[in-house]
Length: 445
Picture (cartoon, rainbow, N blue to C red):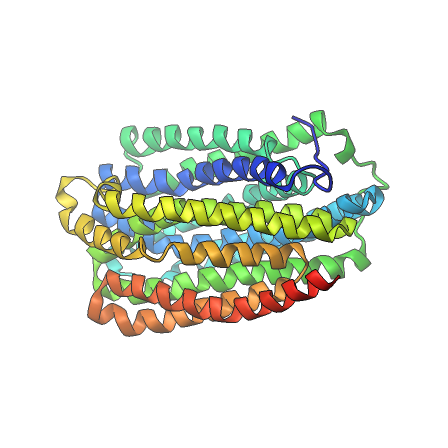
């Protein structure tokens, strides 16, 4: 388990597949945190409780993916230094990332706990669910310090080619989360707050397991006091990479927050349905994202080692994987849309199920587009061109939000699906010419 992998030698397809599979499985289990909350709350507490969790989800996801984005940006630098074989510099980057990222996370946690209610009010959250949403959100904010610890350890290990270790911890904590959901929500009748506490406990466990694993199994990541330093020179590069990656995630989830504002006026049933289909969207799109992350890791190491031909091979492998997965995904979601939505609510939620199924069947025709955008972004990130990924995400979410407010009043949740199409078209219109130029330049070198 303590193995690190040099991806500058060997077959690109083998490295990317081996690297992507644990990421995909890990993300699936991470998504069970929110999905388990929504399914158990929706079935055992009711539609209002499901809507309360749904209203809090965009805010929760913004902060979660700020943290993920910070760690992703840090891992690109770590991958480069590991590819170069510069271990002292790698250690300075890791320690600088831990210190700066930890301070930032603590500040975010405090602000989030203090202002949860006010943020929900700004989102036009209905009065009948705002108190439950606030309680859920405040508890979740308290657990984000553990989320940072897990993600920074996981990103460090992945930058060194080890994507297996963090997977085992995530599986364990995800199973615990489901068990704790059942105990708190079903047996103790703790409602929405109980679901939040279940997630809090599970996140804490995953962070603790990462710490223990690194201390006992990964000697290269053991630091002496002299090695655990705050390098101001590296901080500038770290902030540059991490801020762009985090801003990209902020753009995406602030956009989702604004889209939630377009959904909320449609009523409780629409909010509940949107919460359910958002969870399904996350699950089905996660493999596309993780194939791109694996490609990023491969490209970053080979970029650091100066192996240009490997970079081209890695991109081609990633693109083929995205295309095959997208074809399977589109057929599966279209066929099983009704059954997937019905997982989240009981028989009394027929209106929620029908609305969600219509949304998913519309989205099924579009799912190949995020596959294309993800692999292009994976290439840009691996080459250190994170500003391209930020700009394209900003354009995508901008187009999507504007379209959502225009289309949702006329088409309901299907209008939100049409808005996704608009956003992805705008994104590809920006990314494809940039990629074509970069690819031609790479071929000449």
